[in-house]
Length: 270
Image (tube, rainbow, N blue to C red; front, side, top):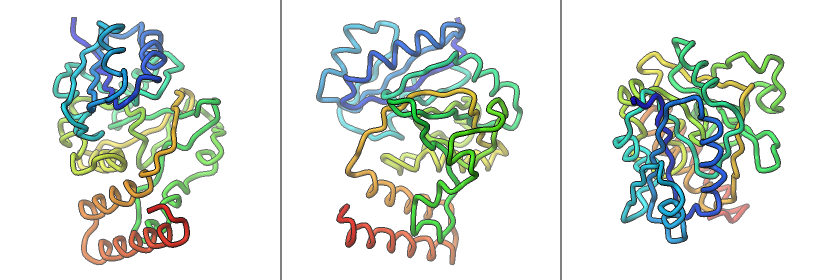
């Protein structure tokens, strides 16, 4: 039987999330022909043991070192067969029938990637979309999230209506293999963070765009990562090199240097 959907998960020391994530997939994907491909980035906890002991319906790929998010996803997808691809973080729980979300994708010609509403562990709304950076917006990375009021608040007047956005989080990113292949998947120059922004930007080169569906949602156990700010700045620096030209590149790099200096001097983040 041909798989309609490949669910791609990258793990790294993820033992506490495995059960809830995989059980939610089983519940919410019961109407679909799907496969689960898990790429483990050299976990040192019980991640491998739990997966091998309790889940014989997955394909597990074990790396001998931590290759990062982009390379992990790319390698997992190389072993997958589905017509559609869902990038899903292991620290997530699906809350609704995924076939309904897939149908939304199929019924909208211009969709290149589709995201849904993200909730935290207490089911409070989290912003999961943003604007592509402009040179001056990189002085303050949070300004990339300054979009419409309904996105900031999480209250949508018509939640069943698709919203076109610049980018969606890679924690839940639904796309089509045809489009994934056309833009060469995730850029492996990004180790972690901003690879999802870059992927969404690349979709524009094939005249496909990113949409957000607020009527459906998932839980994401977003944790604190002390390296996040540093990795974000590094990621956006790579993004600038790839997508900005001439004066805009100079302005963007200057903005990132200001951002870095402020956080280093006044917040002691580095």
